[in-house]
Amino acid sequence: MNKKTMFSIITIVLLGGILLVLCIKDPGNTNKKTVKHSYPDKKNTFISSNDAIDVVLEHTYLSYEDLNDLDIEFDYKYKKNVYEIDFNYDNCKYEYYIDAINGEIIYSFKEFD
Image (tube, rainbow, N blue to C red):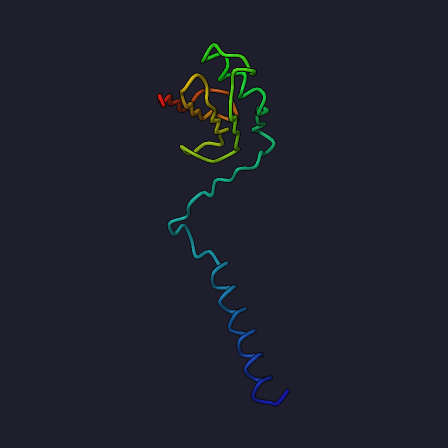
């Protein structure tokens, strides 16, 4: 490597380090935002996906065998950790969002085909 290339690399590394320090430095309470995440902490333990399905089954008066094309995803919607549950039954499409902390139904939708 020649001196010019080495100087360029060192300059880029130093500038990157300076920018990193400036980004991390907190000059005070300047528009801080709390970042939500989809991972449990010690206070909040999540219900299982099976428990979320049980909530849906109780709400729809269906059994597990009635559910066709069942799809369950863990997601973050409505500022909450939720299980998104989609399935078909008797020419209808169902969609539910179940609160992953307390098992409450946050959203439900039924569409006729």
